[in-house]
Length: 236
Image (tube, rainbow, N blue to C red):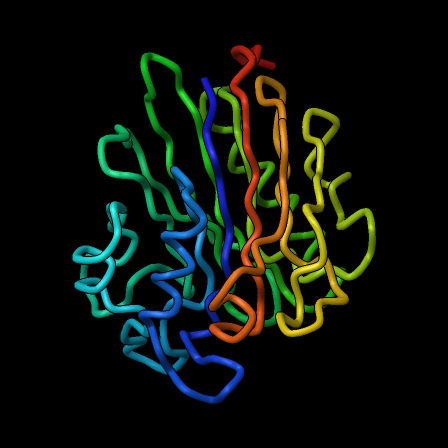
């Protein structure tokens, strides 16, 4: 089984021209042709955190369903994050993971059953300080260890300029991939957006999407990863 995963920090839909145009983000999402997309900065920062990327626009102009990470408020997600799943894919569980740090951070996960194969996707937006990023990755690892073993991808804005990206905090079962330079979008120099895959997953191909209007729609370019599910993951 093959899946295309993607991650996109949409910068509250504020483009490099200082214009807030959610439809440009939607155009990029459609161009990615992904099955599952982890999004960051989908909401305005201040309470009650209204959505910067309107739910109705996604529903009308994409083939994605929006998972209910914020069922009781105007936000599109949780801590500015959400996961979009192609319509027709069976989501069995969603969870929120509280992360340590100086500023409020969290991770979100979705578990799916695709043709009888269980798969997990975790969306992250890690902190700016290395010590806290490492703590956050360790917290994600601990949270996943308490759930059933299954092929898992962790993707999002790792906010890390180093090559290693703190992957050792996830344990030996994960391989961290850097699809390419994604920040800042006009002339990328930093590979901040990444994907880590567990046993049971094989990354076939990956890259950074820089087609129009991605270079102006946000300060990040989206990444994509073509994943092959190669088998089950043994329980510890």
